[in-house]
Amino acid sequence: MNNDDAVQKLTQLEVIRQREGLEMIPSENHTSPAVLQMLGTRLTDKYSEGYPGHRYYGGCEYVDQIENIAIERAKELFGVSHANVQAYSGSPANQAIYYALVNPGDKVMGMSLYYGGHMTHGLKVNFSGTIYDSVQYTTDKNGFMDYDAIAALAKQEKPKLIMAGTTAYPRQIDWKKLRVIADDIGAFLAADISHISGLVVAGAHPSPIGVVDVTMTTTHKTLRGPRGALILSNGNPSNPLVKPERTVANIPSLIDRAIIPGLQGGPHNHQTAAIAVALGEALKPEFKVYGQQIVANAKKLSEELMNRGFNLVTGGTDNHLMVIDLTNKNISGKQAEVALGLAGITVNKNTVPFDTRSPFDPSGIRLGTPALTTRGMKESEMIQVAEWIELAINNVANDSKLKSIHDQVREFTKSYPLPGEN
Ligand SMILES: Cc1ncc(COP(=O)(O)O)c(C=O)c1O
Image (cartoon, rainbow, N blue to C red; front, side, top):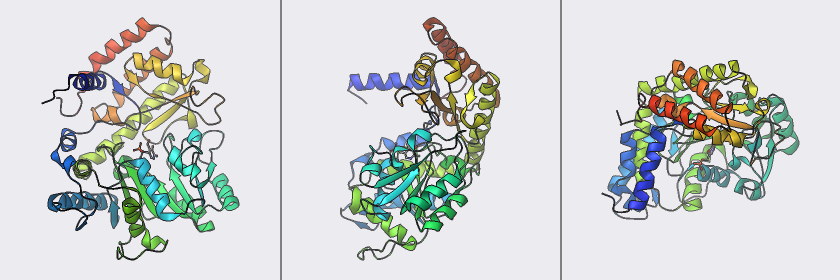
């Protein structure tokens, strides 16, 4: 039932765009019908500020139980004793971590956006770089995280919080090395595993749990849930009426208080229910197979692209994504994004380490395999995908060629339906 033709029509067009194309933005995925269904429920009508059993509103008996299911599943999936599932999305969840652990003006450290970090890790135009005094680390010249350089910067700057994690980095992160760096200067260490949490669940990337002090993940990337976030830690919340000191043991209480009353009002209950359903899916053995396949596909795709003369930052991938430096192809990331889009392959332009071009028209593109893997594609399909990428990049100015690639992509995707459409 929808009487709004304008919005309905555009929504349908977006579904067709997804169905008939290859979604290769590595932070995107296709959710299950069960997850989608929860997002369109009456739960969205309900106010429930507070936490289960301690709400500021009546009528919360069912949403309490739903939130508790989400919390318990998050705890089981990641092996922690505390999970906050209320952050509206990844950026507010990171804001809650800063709010919980440091004061405005305190020094914080994270990876520069231009080298693979996220803007909430201290970019100067983001809250994290304006409210806090942020210092940023880069990569080595080949695009790898340089733990010695990070250690030296930490020693020099002595941040109170290190926010570790990446948004465009194709290699595994060594949490233990970061722990040593943080301990050396007495800093809190937070892990942002938004991109890789599905891989962590599948055992395809080392987990930061038990190594770092607090872990954040969005729920909508490799974890394949609705938009949202989890903040995970160990310990138990203390008496909510007593203001906790900033200690590692108090992180569960500090996070809960940062979310509400610190930053947010009512939780989005429809989203919490969808998170609960997605976490239920991620707890199934099939999800481990899925997570491993994402990486196998990315490795195959990266090899195929390199065989076709593409330069990949760090020379390959260990995870779900790769960054292609297009300098040797004499086109920019923006041109490539547009051309691939016309060919039905959605990627995003991205800076490469030490990029000489502007972030608005950088030298690279970022692409990954989570969504294609959800549609059932495996290594053999990656050969075909690499072929189309090469063809499109070699024909950026040839619209009819790009359209003919899209025709082939459209035909191909019929064999790989979106979840629930088969
Ligand atoms: C590492 C990382 N952290 C945080 C976020 C922010 O998440 P959201 O877009 O849900 O605010 C992203 C999103 O791309 C991310 O990649």
